[in-house]
Length: 166
Image (tube, rainbow, N blue to C red; front, side, top):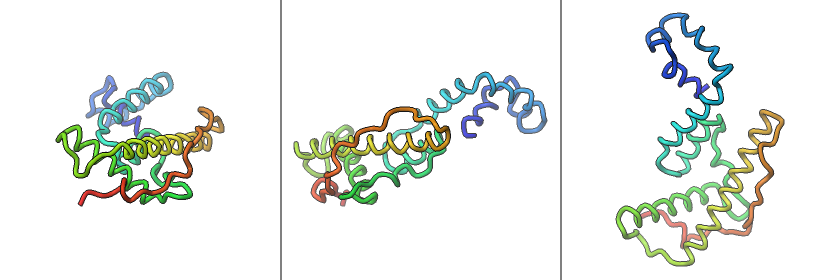
């Protein structure tokens, strides 16, 4: 449905015609032949607008592109709550942003941070991929890819690494 928002923009009919008459019904048949192009264009538009991988932005992006609500709710494992995952992700983004844009961070970045956040991002990628895979399967009864191996289920919440900016 959100990809269909592109139809008035891509239509040979003016936006006025789309919203005030039945002429758009003639153009709706383009979906039968051009749906893949419209979906690809829609995805590219949404990705271009996405500036930050913060949890709320990720949730919004996956909702707009796939209709998957609250992807970030799947971000947990036995030793890590969703709330702590969000805190760690925001910490990582804050540190990266400070270093890239200000050339200094609000706290020292250590080698152990790099190792920790590397495992952390791999966890999120694997869990997110599996959640999307299951979501697609539930709607199509086809698995789009093999299940991702989630490597480090023993990663624990590290309050030293995952601190909010004070």
